[in-house]
Image (cartoon, rainbow, N blue to C red; front, side, top):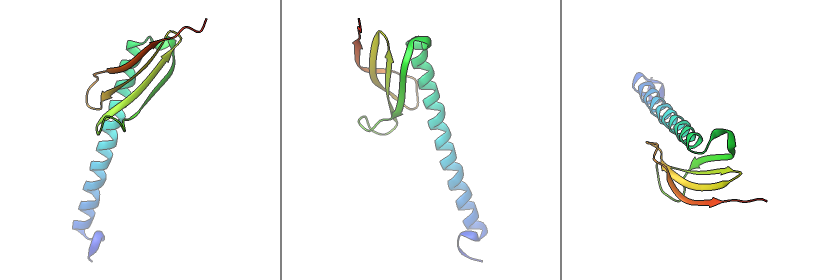
Length: 96
């Protein structure tokens, strides 16, 4: 039997699947770490909005984030492979 259903083809498919799943797991873990860092930094109970998503502006392997509380709005980015926070804008808000 030839093609992807041979032993060699199955090994290639299995290896590719393992690599893709590992990459997705690393992304999920890094996103959870970033959200945990942001919740620690900006009092979890006061956060009204927390968004994290892959960055289009800062290149590969970066997350963009938005945090909003009643007092402050923060935008920034963070590398996917550590918990460094880079704040781009921090705006105090007064709705009174």
